[in-house]
Each structure stands twice: as structure tokens, then as C-alpha cells.
Image (cartoon, rainbow, N blue to C red; front, side, top):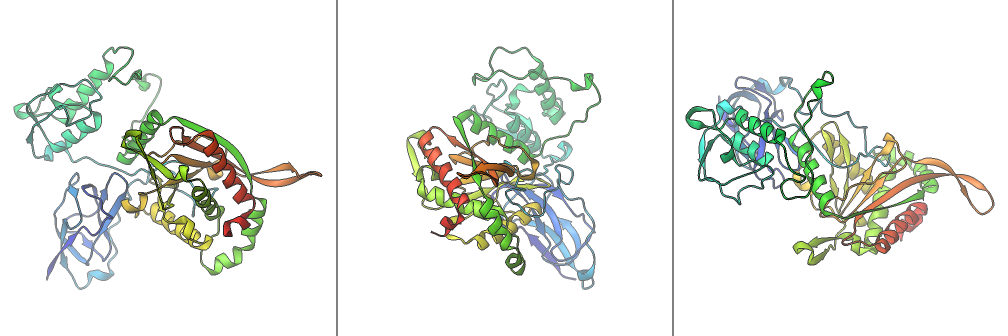
Length: 448
């Protein structure tokens, strides 16, 4: 029987995507489009499917390998009767990491800030030891570091050291020929954490947080954080430290919008989609960005230049079982409400299935983040740098509003605009948020 090779297809420009899970083993029978491995980049995870049906005779990759488009994945012996076989059940990565999201995103069910998925390290015993030259510029140190000429460690240990900000020259290797093992690195980190430190660490001016043994107070369970979970935390921390945040609050009267939306339900069913408040919100943000170009810009050259974008791409934070992801809707200002509704639903579905490509989460000018049905009447979202602003949306509520003659019940939507005060001043932010509130209160303006 002919043996065919499966390769990595176009993965949206991601370079060096890491193999985080093998979903099949040698000898397994697979059907067409059955997932073979899971790749993870800095932005997303993706499953690589079989391009033929048959029996896996050789796996050409291992967990921890870095792959790009065109890399060989497996050799499959094509069988005539395998096409109708069911795939071997395998656990879905990230099943236990988060609560499942609702069926489609809306102002009431689109989650807050960004994205996570599972990550695994290759066992240290399977690593190929290498001799590495280390220079002071090769890593960004967090823990105390020194410079050495050579270290002896495997790739997984070196990767973990980079993530922790530790130069391996400081670590005493206990493996054969002084090889640094993962256990040596972990022991070194524990030792450094427990050592007395001064008022500040690492030259950042930020006091360190002491390590606490929570097991002294009761039963605990320790689970490792995923790669994207840690990446999200790093990005949010960097943005919070570098961006002077200001948040402005307001409420939009969406009573008429909700009445109009309810009247579109029958047409939405004919179009096989849902018409939620989110497309209207995206359209209002796009027009407000067009009218307030300062919000549609980014800092460049260490703050020396301001990049004005001639396009309007908006990211939408979507809650998924694997974590929070932010697909980007492109050219929002040029699309109709129906086109936006369809695209939002499609991207949210692909996000929940972990099929978003890295390119589909890049290039955003602005982000919309919602607490939806989670509740609350306001929050302060963190700017998704290098964007300069983000809109936070909370749960709607019926409130009495004075109409000049009496108090009437109105559906009010709380909104909060956080922005980078280096670029956006109070006047810019106020005009932008007021414009959004006005557009949502009178959706006829969206067609102008």
C-alpha cells in the first residue's frame, strides 16, 4: 500500500509553532481530516489534520518540536477501508481549563480580555543535550544573573530558563557531566525566591511578592498555567506598567436599538444567523473611530511618532472553553450589520473550536470587551497595547429616565472607555465615548 506524508499546511504566517500534544500514535488508524497533532504559537493553538485516511506508520515530530509551514508531521499507510472508520477518541486540549462559553458572542456574552490554551514540555530524559553560548544580551533577566561562556542543558530546560528569566550559568547541574536538569532549575528558582531581598528587585522599582506555602492552611491543588495564559498575563502586566490608564464611564440608551433588533428576528432566522447587539456596537465604534482618528492610532519609535491608521479593524474578546481569545474583525466601517453578525458568529465558533489562525488575531486598532451576562454595572478594561483605547461593556438594565414630562423605563447599557493618556486626552476620550453613546441611542445615524 502506498505511504503518504502529511505536512503542516498554511498556518497563517506563524513561525516556530510548538508541538504541544500528539493526538495519535504509531499504529493508529485515522480518517480524513482527523487531527494528528496540536500546534501552539504565541497567539493561538491549531490542530493539524490528516490529509489521507490510513494507518500511522511513523510520527516525524515530538512534543516540544518547533514547526513551520511545510514541515513533515507523519507517514500514513493509505488503506482502502479506513475512510469510514471512526477516529480514536482523544482528549481535547484545554477541556478542564475554563467554563464553556455561550453559543454566540453578543454584548451580553462576549468575554473580557484575551486567550489561553494548553502547553506541554518534552520530558527532560528525551532531550538532545547541546552546548550553548550565552551572552548578556541573549536573555532578559528577572532573577540575578551572571555571564558565562558555556552551559550544558537540553532544549526544554533552556526554554524554561528563558521563560523564568534565569541564565543557566547560575544553576548547578546535577546531571551527567554537569548537565543542568529541569529539577536543578526549579530548585534554583525556589532558592532565589526564598532569599531575603531588598525593597526593590531587578531594577524595576517594584517590590517582590513573598512566596507563601498555602498548604500550611489547608488542602491545595497546584496546576501549571498554560503558555497563552502566561503570555496574556505578561502582556497585561506590561501594558499596565507602561500605559498611563484613564477610564471614562457613560450609559447608552439602547431601548430603540433593542426594539429594532427584535423586529429583525425573523429575517435573521432566514439568514441562518443571530442578530445580537454586538454588530451595532461594532458599527458604532467604527464610525466613532473614523470621526476621532486620535483613537485609531498607535505610538511608534519610543513615543517619537504617532502612526495614524487608514483602516478600521476591531478586536472582539470572546470567551471560549480554552480561555479568552480576541479575533479581529477587519474593515468594520465598510461592512453591513448583517455581514458583521455573520462574521462575528463564524469567528466566535472557530475560536471555541480552537481553529483561529494567528493572523486572525492581529492588526486590531481597537478592542471591545464585554462582561455580558456575568453581571456588574461597570469595570475598567486594560488597554491592549499597542492600541491606545479599549471599550468595556457591562450588563444592560432597565432604568427610569426623565423624558421631560415623566420618568419612563429605558434599557441602559453601561460602557467604559479606557485609554492611553500619552496619546488620548480627556477631550479626545470624552468626544469618542459620547459619539458611541449617541450612535447607539439613535441607530439611524449608523446608515449616514
